Image (tube, rainbow, N blue to C red):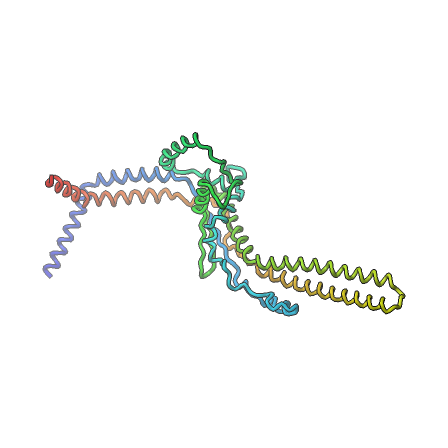
Amino acid sequence: MTENKQKTETQEIDLIELFRKLYLSRKKIYKAIGISIIVGFIIGFSLPKTYQVKVSLSPESGINGTSSLSGIASMFGLSNASGGFGEDALTFNMFPEIVKTTPFSLEMLQIPIQTQTEDSIMLYDYLDMEKKPWWNHVMKAPGMIIGGIISLFKEEPIDTITTINPFQLTREQSKRIRMLQDVLEVETDKKSNMTKVTVSLQDPLAAAIVADSAIHKLQEYITDYRTRKAKQDYDFQLSLCEQYKKEYFEAQQEYAQFADANRNIILQTVTSEKDRLQKNLSLAEQIYSQSMGQLQVLRGKLQEAKPVFAVVEPATVPLVPASPKKMMIIIAFAFLAFIFESAWILFGKDIYHDFKNEMKKKD
């Protein structure tokens, strides 16, 4: 019991001593906090305002149902015509990965957007117009000077969105793709299949347009993938229907002309030829009818393959910037200044003097 009391008294004495040191050095702490507030104020007001738009997208559940086509398919002998799309190589959970691909980024960079201060401009050009903090320009100044000198002796091709070669991108084009990927984020909840698209840009109108365009691009991407095979089958069947329709009309015309030319003629050869033409007409009509039925099935299959999306939270133009949070930056700098200055007063100064004395003794 006596040892515990002594430990408690020692701890209390140590805490009192620590607070006493901090109190005696309060002016230094106030000074550090004041300087940090000024630094935080400068940084907070140097960062450009950024507006954030969030859009939520949810795919329709149960899009793989095929019972509605099974009866029609069986009528035309197409047992697998309404087959499902149960396992796809491309799923809704892959939206975040799709956004990071080069083809998707290049399509997004080519969309025209509208800003609050400019007319219509390509997203590719707008990304290079966004403001940067002043220290970015200071850090990049040496590289810009060297690049300017090199450009005097080296001709570089004009870099525009119309000259992009996806197979061989330029350094500037790769930079724009990275810039787009930094401002465009996509997250998917695997449990609910809810996809959230977040766009952060300095212009609120541009941010809303880019978010809305990203949603539509993702919808087109997944719809094109899921309907590609069904559309190929439909287009092929449509061409067959056109061919069978032509053959049916030709058989019908041939039969009508022969019947009109041999009216009231009772000859075996005429009768046989008329029967043959009539059978050809019936066969052509049957084939054409069946092909049209198959076309209707494939049309239903194509429509069924198209996924339906529900935009839970549409894109809207934000009124208030999402960042920078100036007050939070100032408070964070003030808090860090208090922590570091207190640590230096309580521990750092003694450690530094001990280390300095040891170095002098060694010398």
